[in-house]
Length: 271
Image (cartoon, rainbow, N blue to C red; front, side):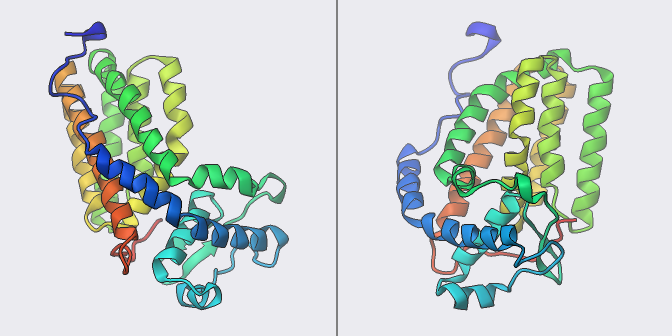
């Protein structure tokens, strides 16, 4: 038993094929420039007012012809706009430009930092370091009200799943509830700070990977059950599995993006 009650041995979240991650990072550096260029161009069009809030962005086919690139590149560029809060996907409509304050619209340098896929792997590593002990604390400190809040959120996730909607926003909020149950304000602020990134990336994965929404519900329900059981070791195992599953899904997703056809995108409602 290590410091703070952590077990050693088979519970490490770093049991990942790091050779695959190295290849992914190299692949990412080669392929992320073009989607960013297209996203920056569309951002400039929005900033200038040539594309206005409420309007529909050009279709994927039109953008493919305009920029002379494949569908997967255009999809990634459009998802960049979603990550930045400039657009949203609407079933039967395509991508709609969202309202924003032109004076606070972030610039290309910040955009590049937010969209760097290799930085996503760093975020995953940071989550593995921080969220496992948070989950252990939640198992011993969660109040009845904390458990009720988690149970209600899981019910909302299940309802959205049954109606064919994504659950990424609720899934991100669930991690905030775990941090709140840990009763450590500093850790809670850290989780709050990464919620926008978790939400954006969750949207991306759920839209592009069939069955991901259902998997999210299963993993988060398992976390809840282990916290409810007041067993820190069981919670640790559940969080390790959850984060390892997320890491594996990220690797799968970017491998699919690198294939000629891109990921198998299914139309989903983001309401």
